[in-house]
Length: 349
Ligand code: NAD
Ligand code: TYD
Image 1 (cartoon, rainbow, N blue to C red):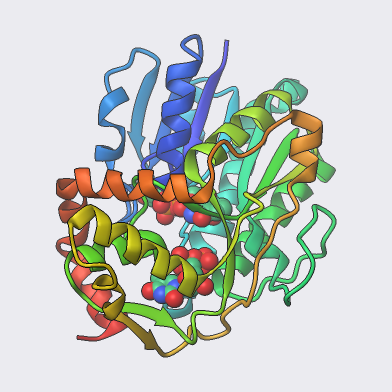
Image 2: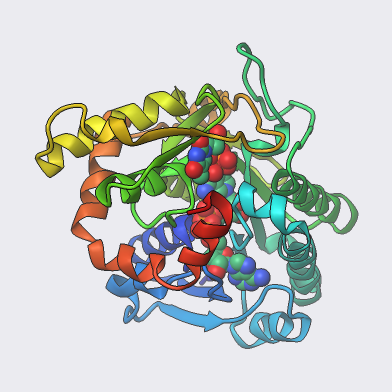
């Protein structure tokens, strides 16, 4: 019997992880705890919200009393921790909220887990979902391995690196069984349109300028979100306690090439003349401290657990564009109100 606390389950990746666990493992009880920040949205989980093995609790991972109570009342047996502030640009403007949620919130969860599990700690798992950005920035060559030294460059990645260190410290000091994944950039349905791919889809749809930072030469390694959820499932069930697994798509793209590809896909889907959407591309001031390249070597999870990405990027991008075009209402809901203010402040006009 497992009662799994999934934090951040109303967000982009979390909602796909919640759905996978609720549908795939009916004997498990899935407790989704999320404070519903601007990035959290229960519309992401409409299809499973009435499932008998699912409950939602609105709450902040930084709230010590609430988290202790959730562990006791729900008899939490395992944690999959995704709740975080997740956007680099926002971390540059407001680093403290990243320290609060990503570092303090993680330590609060670790404390609560130890308090609840101290009699039989080896029977539990604390799974921490992290990012490849903790390894810093690569030049043209090389890959991030699990052994690559941490070298975070942005307030976001520094806060995630801090949280990873605390999780490992709990394993070392208190013998908490932990698992950590460090994944590359995700894309797919339900991603908040502050991130590159959904922002570009939304702007192309609305004939708005497509703001490419710097020269668009920065490289990211993209993975379809459902493949990340599958990797979390594999590591949760079959990964070794105490281990770290890098997760990535072996799928590197320059930002400008992704934007051009998206323009082509959208022209076709919207019935626009070829080349029409690409006219919206606008090069804007670069992000401060912009990491040049991320690239994951995912050999360990592939060799040890048999996981591999299920989709080619072009196919995943088509699916993603189709989802956003089919779900105009979702997009309208999340881009009304506070999003407009954020967009104005960050991109101007
Ligand atoms: P997201 O911003 O879409 O979702 C984050 C969720 O956490 C939201 O539902 C939000 O409401 C919730 N949340 C934020 N602060 C909270 C708090 N104090 N208490 C409770 N809930 C809170 O993020 P995402 O892109 O889905 O990322 C999920 C996790 O995966 C993060 O830990 C992120 O660092 C990691 N990650 C993301 C990517 C990516 O490409 N998006 C890649 C690798 C790892
Ligand atoms: P993002 O989706 O914010 O993810 P991350 O910074 O965590 O990798 O950005 C992906 C890349 O796209 C990154 O190199 C910054 C760039 N980018 C733009 O060029 N324009 C934009 O409007 C955004 C949001 C990102």
